Length: 232
Ligand SMILES: [Fe+2]
Image 1 (cartoon, rainbow, N blue to C red):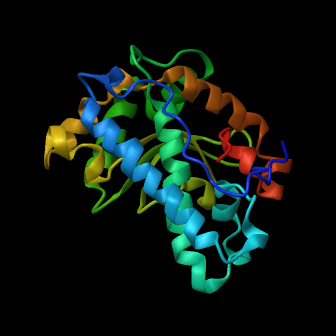
Image 2 (cartoon, rainbow, N blue to C red):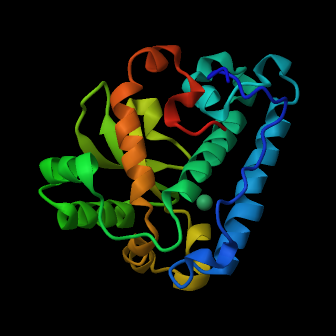
């Protein structure tokens, strides 16, 4: 598939790769149902609406839209970027989690975490702290600074910004919007972050880490949607 195009005229909500209740008791089924079926769905719907008047942008991936803001007419730019970001980031989030996972990363990603954070526990503490400190809604990431061979770092983004637009390749992500945790944790974002680790899909993170070694060159220059290893 052309990495710059979806081949579809409308963006589509990707299916959740597991049942709503599969991440229980760590993430409750009701939160997952609302989060995926309502919140993520509304970003997709609003993205399609925002693109309605711009046939030249239809068929572009949401990632392409994020990486090429100057190609979006100014009057529609904020709506397109906000909703494309919501679509991309949630698509990454569903894959960052999986039932019966957790534990620790292995192989090259484990070595890189040790190298750049001093150890797995230090990395987790830094991730939780950064996520807890972000004011308002946003996302917390483990990202790799590009180009090839870049170091890992923890960063946060506001709204639905994605670190790829700042030159960092996302390896792992968690959602800091209240809709991700309020039903179960109410205002306690720290408890939500600490309770999230048992559902982290380190196999997916390792796959992304491996890909980040190879994708910086041409894909990066082309600002391709496939760069994220998720085509939405
Ligand atoms: Fe969310």
